[in-house]
Structure formats: C-alpha cells, structure tokens
Length: 135
Image (cartoon, rainbow, N blue to C red; front, side, top):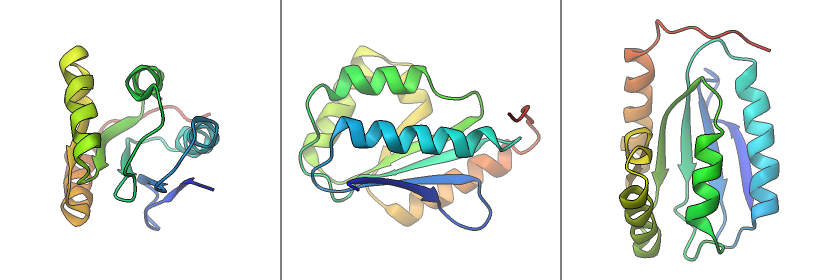
C-alpha cells in the first residue's frame, strides 16, 4: 500500500498516515475510510499526523481533493499536521491555505517529525476535556 494508516502509539490518540513517494487517490480513500472508522470509536479528539516525508510529487488535483477530505472530516478531528520538507508540497500547501484560509487554522505544515508529534500531543492535552459520542 502506498498510503497506510495506523495508531501512532498505544495511546490511540494520533492517527499516523504514512505516504510513499508515489501514491494514488484510491489508496488514500481506502486509508481515510479505515482511519475514520478508527476515529469513530474514540470519545476524544484524535490528532492527525500526515507523514509525507517520502512524497516528492503528489497526485493530480491535490488542492480540490484535499479540501473535500478536510471539509468532511469527523467532528473529533484534532490538530492535523503534514510533515514534509518537499518544496512542491510546501508550495501546494501555501496555495491551498491562500485559497481556503480556514484550512491553515486546522491543518499545519512542519518539516520535523518529532516536533510534530510533540505539538499534536500538547494540543490533545490542552483539549482533553472535550468529549464526543462514539458510534
């Protein structure tokens, strides 16, 4: 699979999406559906770690499809961060957040994996009092 999703660790509060260099939308769709099923079972916010460090060239229509997936995310989606040092991914992120500024509030970009994990864990700790219905 060129897009995988698993819990980051045993705490099951961060979904870790791992993207290979070449990935396709149908593979992402499958991973997202699995991830959202995992999220539905949690009564708390779930952080999203989009590990795109291996991606050099994303598939076509990234901006339009990203907006769809972001707009349809579950209510318990917590802080989400794309981890990449790719200039093309950074450029696409800049365009996405220029066109849709609200996305830049909920979805961030960083190039340091460990810092990203710390940021998400801190956000989750700061928002741990919010509960959701599961199902």
